[in-house]
Figure 1 (cartoon, rainbow, N blue to C red):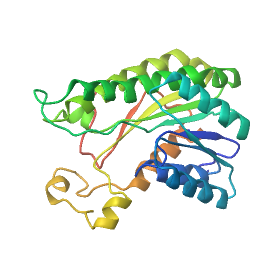
Figure 2: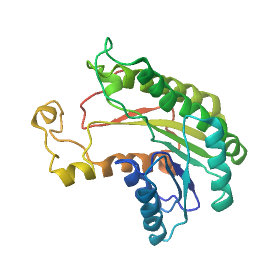
Figure 3: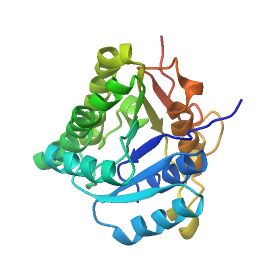
Figure 4: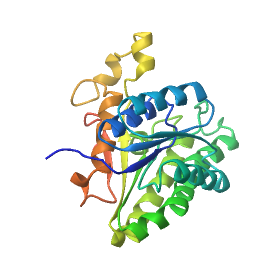
Length: 253
């Protein structure tokens, strides 16, 4: 038994980000061809494209605004011209902003999180689900966060967006499950990425002390969960919110 994504075509939004780039490489290592979405970091997108091709897989880079239905539809057209129909969608992109208290948080920060979490999910479903329904196979994987369960001070805009995303994904799972399409979420904790390795900031005793496994997770561990959910090994898992955070938050029954 092995995790095999041969003949699958994946789209990773926010692929040039700290977690997205590892997801992209991992999906390609498992055999998938990959559409690499970026918003501003074209240099990283081109580098990832070269890495995917070096693994013997096809790749295309697509620039776009994931908060725009028209832009996502344009991305779909470009991907289909280069690779074919997408059957694995990883919704990883999210707007960045400065966290502060509800009383001080700018209203536009809530709007940006709604657009990049909720509306991105809706637009991706509208754009890519029809072909998956026709093919009777597909995967939607949303990148959520442990913050959705923590609800700590200053997290309000981020949590509001991600909890809204959670609602969309759970309902989408029920609406398209009959077509053999699974819809799941991976919820990372505070994850070690290339930025930490470069800055020697991998350790945080205060955070690690709250985690049952007593460490921070890695970007590769997040990517491993994404690849598993994309594979046929996860064919009977749908509607799930899966924390990948060493047990720092634990959904209850």
